[in-house]
Image (cartoon, rainbow, N blue to C red; front, side, top):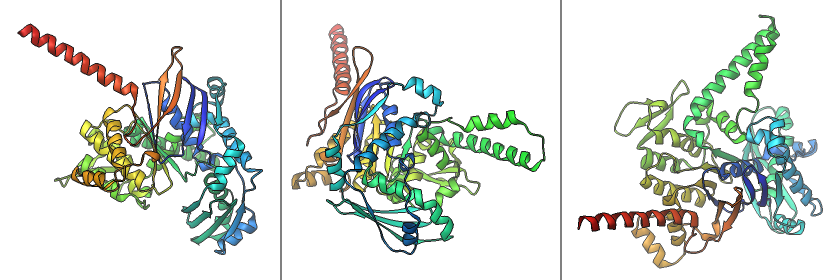
Length: 464
């Protein structure tokens, strides 16, 4: 699997590992140390549509739509080629990944390197050893992909489908192979979704983009119908306004958020976690109005407030609630940039527990955080994950549910640190049975305690 990588010369980052093999990845670092850049690369690597592009044969698609299984062979001598083509695809798409022009991307990232941390032999061994059992949906068709550990053959089967067979077949030839390659030779993520720091304003952005796209469609329609003279400047302006305006991860989230009535019709697998966020953190219920607007109904009130009038925490967490309730499924990767934004310390502890529940229910999660409260609570959950009767009894006594404790082996922690030359180096920290020590955070806490003690004792000695 393509999960152990090394990044070089990415903005301020001189070198940093990128670990995507764990169910939970926590990235810490000072402001401006490249945490978001790292998240954007992780997002791109986990996006099946990025390439390499291969097609199923027409005969295989026909067999699938006859509801018969299809065997796909991955020969060991060609497996490393999939890895290299994937890494090359990321480098070629840096303009889209970061939402900038191609020339600008070439100038800014001219020395960027994305390398595998494994030899071809090690990579092949992990691909062959991987066991897969994935149920997924593409369009109006349901599929199952399976692969036994130790085999190079994957089996794909269509369970059912709706709609026109021919048009479905045409759309599936590339899309299906993208999923298969990502599962067998890639990161193993079915679909990445990222909640960036801009998420509290996402509905404003989405409405603005929707209006801009509508203007573009109307202008083109009038031009092609002859209703108005050609206005190349207007159309060029509107097209440029849509191109490379936002980073790939943000653009995809905007696309999801631009039509909430469509999203609300979908069924995700984590409605219980969405309800926990509403009950424990928002103290109210989120829904979509008949006009497609997000509204919030506070507990104890009959009013449904526009999201713009909700508290900052409601705006920040609303996307997460809808994604958990209507979209996210096992095997997806959820990337959250600073989940502590707008959360009181007590709420940050609750959020840590909810993230642990996501992980334990099959969702892969990657977060970047500055929060000592969240790191300390993750350490608590890792210690509670030591499977002993005493720990189980203590967890219950302290109010932790069975799906909160974390296994140390399921957690990766990376710290990004500034070197003397102003560049950043990343390193993975050991995660043990008692959690992880993040020196940069501990130093700040200890220094504050020492300063407070010095001020307190000086103040009281003067008073004496």
